[in-house]
Image 1 (tube, rainbow, N blue to C red):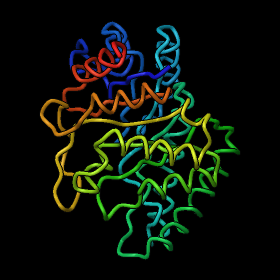
Image 2 (image 1 turned 120 degrees about the vertical axis):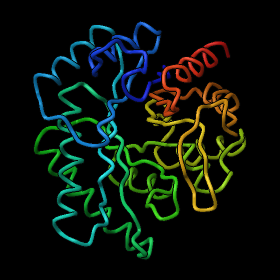
Image 3 (image 1 turned 90 degrees about the vertical axis):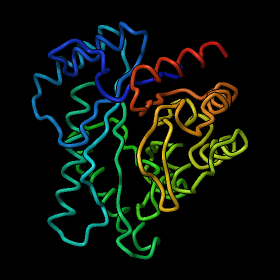
Image 4 (image 1 turned 180 degrees about the horizontal axis):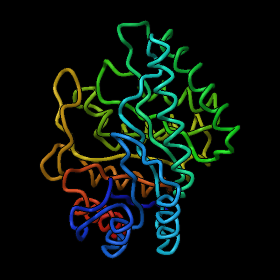
Length: 274
């Protein structure tokens, strides 16, 4: 099954809000998944995580996590690199307690470095993170995201290469790919090519457990500027959904539109009608 997730507690969540009430509100709207937006910091309350998990299980809601933005696995300073690893591990640890299946991470910046050298730095950091995660018996997925600016490590080829090497799977953000290329990756032909490469890299079964992001997006020659509601963008989102349906893609697609639940429900209903 392909689950459509709202990115954080819906805007219409009753006050005082919060993740648990957000999960309940999303479920009431007919949404079947939610991404926990820990983009500023990771909450450290195990009891709260247990409450999130039990609520999601009660309502049969699928959860994913977005780790903090403040991660650079290509950081030159040891303390900054260690802090980045710690943030990823914290998101994985708390995510597992909350019952999430995958943690999305913005992996790195090139910092003017050669892409292949940067890849090796990110690769070494990833190996350390997963080794430490294994010692903590963390089993959820580490999903490196395709990124929206040319200054950021995170092309489709880079995240697929890392994922194949470590037995994980990435977070495919088609809007970021669209912005990074200043308008490409916005057609059925291109999305089929994306899925072909994904399948070639990770195997056909990998299409049954994908972690994706999607929204409209504003961009310039330098790439991503900001996310947009679907109907205020050039995103050919209906064609995108048709490709997912035709290819039998399953997993979670997180709608990162500023319209939040409105566009999440719009996508979900359109997909169900196909």
